[in-house]
Image (cartoon, rainbow, N blue to C red; front, side, top):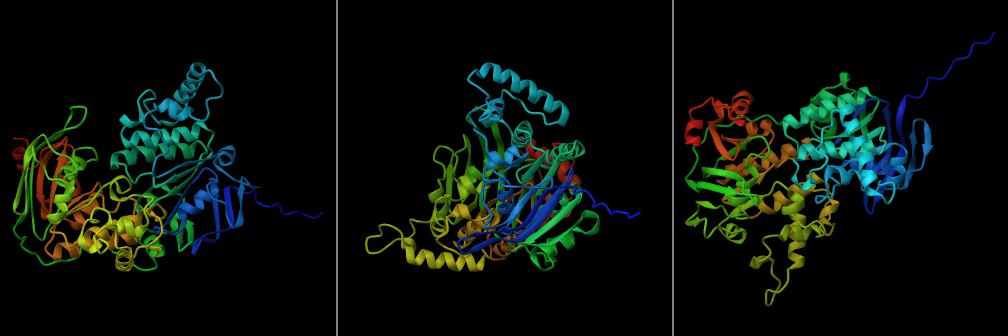
Length: 527
């Protein structure tokens, strides 16, 4: 009797074989092989521009590979567009949500899947199905609320719910925690673990290595468009993954620095109060000062006034009351600072939302570098100063790209074509190039890879050493602790504490972030 050896069954939900993709001179993917096991969480990591999002966009049908093919559940398939991907049971949740803000959550889920002309019946059917899905998955969403009125964590849950409603068995998440608070991240991970237990296959694109180690079963590292490492999570560490991503050791720890005395006050705000368009108080009697040669961190759970504080100090929004001293000038609420005046007074601003406030996405890189500073004489074309001096701007942009390691080094490439981390470096290059006296920077490393984080931190420390005052808003406590000389904590529109670095740890900051007094500074802030 001849014994037969049976082949092991294929347990892969997804196999990508030999995937290559080029955009002009840029080779985004090069002969990529990737296998994702069924009912697992597979991490996909790499530097900005490593080719992760392009690879997943090919799987979802946004792009077509130049070479290679896709297998779903062991069968070779052609995915020519997102509709075909959905038909194969693939769903994708993008870093920037694909939602219509003026519609309700229910209508966003229905959009494109109404199933007929009678919307009333369709709404009842979809509502019942979504309510069952929410019970099964724990993805709680207020179905009748407008998208524009919801916090970002709920929008994230809505996007996942929308994909599951469309039958997704394979779920691609692109930087899902980039805009979430730590609490929202914990809630999301609880949901994702539940989905895995129910048989959903999840591909997680992220830069946050601690999250990879906490959630994923397997991880693949990409560098320069190629796979350089795939292994089980139990066989690696965050340090090894970081080195695989950038090809060298990465150190994000606070360097040993000699103590230095801060210089004179260069910005002072007194009693800033602001109500939003709905009449809700978002800043409540906020006062602070910045000294030359220091980094002041602002910690707090997202949505507690940090964004509004940056907007007011940058001149993008006027408070109802309060005053601001910036250099030699004083501004009152009735005649507030505007962004043009801020730049003249050497106040630079790296906004939290780089897409809406940091650049114009259709502009080429060299125009984004001029944005906000285009009235300066050095950028104006001779002889009458009409238009921009393109040759000078292109040369300067090339120099900035080299200095800040912006990839690819193409000054004419549209700003939207750069990865998020390279867009961030381009904005930082523009603002730091002006040698500011004050830099306001919001979420400087949101959606940025670990190598770029190290670089951005180094640039902020260099700026401080040059005598600039830096106000840093970040939702990452590790970042606050790594960079700041002192820390302000915001909760519900107030400064609830001010701590020297020696007093700071995650516990003390966390207590102040949730308005549990631990330090006498809180009484001063609440007074």
